[in-house]
Every structure is written in structure tokens, then in C-alpha cells.
Length: 253
Ligand SMILES: Nc1ncnc2c1ncn2[C@@H]1O[C@H](COP(=O)(O)OP(=O)(O)OP(=O)(O)O)[C@@H](O)[C@H]1O
Image 1 (cartoon, rainbow, N blue to C red):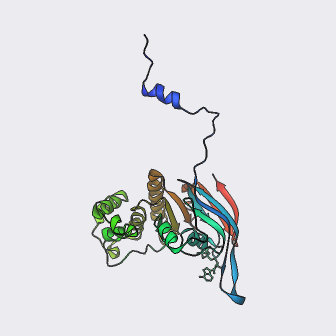
Image 2: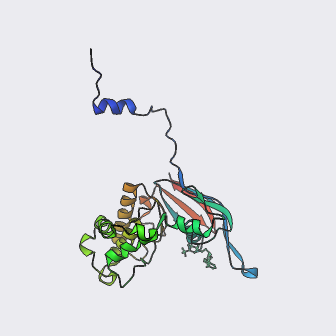
Image 3: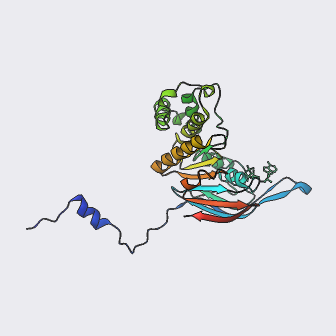
């Protein structure tokens, strides 16, 4: 009897999808539908978002660009459960946010790692203690073995030798790398970043984004990043350009 060839190469050839078979798209991690937003009341009420639709699929890295005041940060804060949705809806990892209870919004915020322009590190805490704060979103349970997890995350951003440094003794790029470690340490499915390179010089900004993108790709993390920085646009899968509260066009993808 001739035994079938079960070498890994043969098996992988057998399970390869037919070239004609289309791979279904990854599920939407962020799904924005008909989103409108207003600030102010009475005569000062002003609409800043107009019927925005935007889908970011699992593992995708999408940049949101556009002139100052066009509504980028407003979208990020609505997706990030930091503001209430007034009209339209956002679905985040399958959970609709419009009309969601306070406790649902708090639970959904735990699924997000935030990175801001100003790194927002606590000046009186060491790099390691700042990264620990990223685990506190999960309460006491999240702090189990916090030291090992925070240290591993700092190693991953290349700051294994700086764990006990205070932010005042770190460079701008190092501080932003601590902020990345803090955002990723609780393994959120989504990262929302608002101008993370704005305070950095070209080389440092590029290195910080490359690091963030690499870590996100390794973990299958979805990123929606607001940026004005056209020096880093090639790192994204897609760039969505906004103007006056509307999406004008999308490049890539
Ligand atoms: N809390 C607020 N109250 C009133 N108006 C606001 C508030 N926040 C933002 N706006 C206005 O809403 C519009 C959109 O602001 P938003 O911050 O979303 O834009 P942006 O594209 O992120 O701008 P930038 O690139 O300058 O950060 C702007 O006209 C802004 O002045």
C-alpha cells in the first residue's frame, strides 16, 4: 500500500484556498453610520459632523486627516465613548453605542487604548507605574501580575532599561513610547490615537509610528489615528480625508 504524502508542504498545498475563492472581509471593528454632531445650544448651536460613514475592519490601520476644525477629534471622541452620540450610530466591536447605558460605555472604553498628542503621563510616576495605569481600567483583576506585564510591554517598546525613569528624565519619543506601552498593555482590540507624532521631530515621529504599527500588526489590533503628519501617511492601510465635517475621499485599501 502506498502511504499518502503528509509532508507539511503537501498539506498546506491541499488546504490553500482556491485562487478563485474570495476571502470574506474581516468584521468591522468600528462602524460609523450616518453620524452627525452639534456643539453648543440655542443660537450658538453649530453642526460639526454631517452624515459620516466610516468602517474600519479588524486589524486595519486607518488615518483620519483634514484641516484643523473639520471634525476629526470629534469623531475620535464619539468612537471612544467619551461623548454621547446625538444622531446616527457607531458600532464598536459589534456593540452599538447610540443610546447605550453609562455602564455599557464604561465597559466599551476598556476595549480601547488611547494615545494622545501630549502623552499624558503622570509626572510623579515612573515609566513602569505609568504603564500599570493602562491595566487599571480592568479593576483589581487587571492588576494581577501587573509588574511582569508592564515590564514586558516596556521591553516591547524598547524601554526595558528605563522602567524606573520619571517622565521628566525621558525624551519626547521615549515618553510617547511609554504612552504606547500604556495603551497596549491591557491588549485592547482598538487603539484610538490623536496626533501622536505632533510633538515629535520627523525621525522620532516616524520611529514612534513604525513601532506602534508593528505592535498593532503583531497583535491584530485595529487603529484609527488622527494625524496632520503627512510624513507618516504610508504606514496606514487607508487614509480617510475629511473637510468641513464630511468625508471627502479615501485613499488606499
Ligand atoms: N467642546 C466644544 N464646544 C464647541 N465647539 C467645539 C468643541 N470641540 C470642538 N468644537 C468645534 O467643532 C469643530 C470640530 O472640531 P474638532 O476638534 O473635532 O476638529 P479637528 O479636525 O480635530 O481639529 P484639529 O485638527 O484642530 O484638532 C470645530 O469648529 C471646533 O471649533
